Amino acid sequence: MAIPDDGAYTRNRGHIVAVREPKLASETAEARMCRDDAAALLRKIGINPTAQRIEIASVLLARPQHLCADELRQVLARTGTPVSKATVYNTLGLFAREGLVRELFVDSGKVVYDSNTTCHDHIYDVDTGVLTDIEPGTVAVEALPTLPAGTRVEGIDVVIRISRVQRA
Image (cartoon, rainbow, N blue to C red; front, side, top):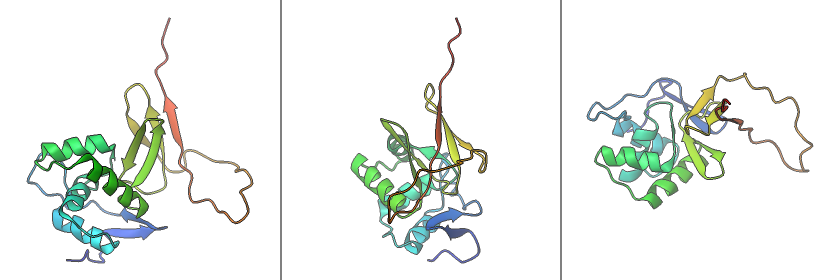
């Protein structure tokens, strides 16, 4: 089954972007994209839709969200789909390389995967671990350094890290 060209998904500068909410399967309390739609999306962008990749895509792409690999594994386990840590990391890396998710390095020990691949920035609360989207156009990058010869800017990811101020 191929995803119909009805505008549900589009390719934006090499990234797959959901332009309308995907159909959700109602079989669990966790939000999930319909497995058939997830499989079709993977096929459309050239990813072999294995059972585990379909499960991962159905959870991760159900709605705009930020999940690290361990959080994704916990969601999958709660829905009766245990997946090995190596499979989750390998699949997330593949999805990021293919433009299906954005890989965000929010601090030295935490990588988060963003299902919203449109151009936007983030605020990361180091105290709570919460990552919040910033509306596009809110952060302005005024100037860039001279780039090495033969290179071009692929993208700019802004993550503003905040913490609570301790009152005396």
